[in-house]
Length: 254
Ligand code: MLT
Image 1 (cartoon, rainbow, N blue to C red):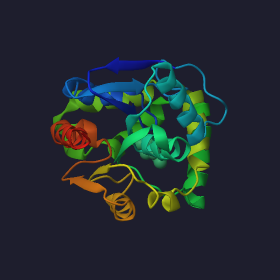
Image 2 (image 1 turned 135 degrees about the vertical axis):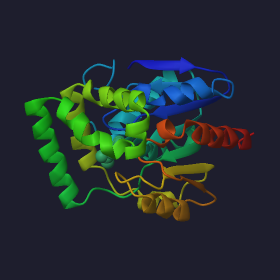
Image 3 (image 1 turned 90 degrees about the vertical axis):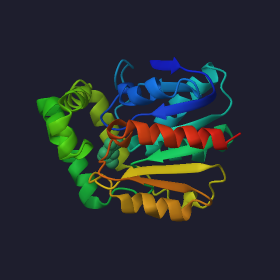
């Protein structure tokens, strides 16, 4: 598994979403090196990390991440995941609660796919197998960023689209199968005993902010930050607000 290990301070595991790679976290790698030792992997089948299984369950990714922390001799980390990364963060917490110092759940949800969403994943997987990743990247871009960001920040829009378009079809398909099969994590939320920060944007249409609000209600003592006029990639669209929140959260752990 390929990864970036950068900065000094509290170990912070940064788990990218679908269909992303660790470059998603560039604004955090640039903005937080004085407060966190950031471990940003490419999940199996994405970025520079090798082939995935045919299906990658959220538990499979979580196991890979625990192996990585073990290899780096990190006993406990703040686990931060965006969207699919949040599904994986919750799977990681369920399997390895003692390895979690805190949770940052960004633009994600605890609820599983319904039948319609599962059927949609199967169609997407077929399309990616037939036509490759570029059409998926094109279709997903308007869900990742607001129309305003796409218009006024073309470099960010292009980098985001390219990040998705370059992901290997096999990794995308394996992730889609795993995402579709993920369990309902709602019952787990009340058992979370570590400090938890939940971040989303008012304009997230991929995962509506109501999902974040529900998690915030269910996780004891958690804090919710809803960033105005920001879509699915809140860490990319509002890096300063996002980084300030993470900085404050990390400081509060000591
Ligand atoms: C993500 O950004 O990881 C995806 O939107 C997750 C999903 O499709 O459920």
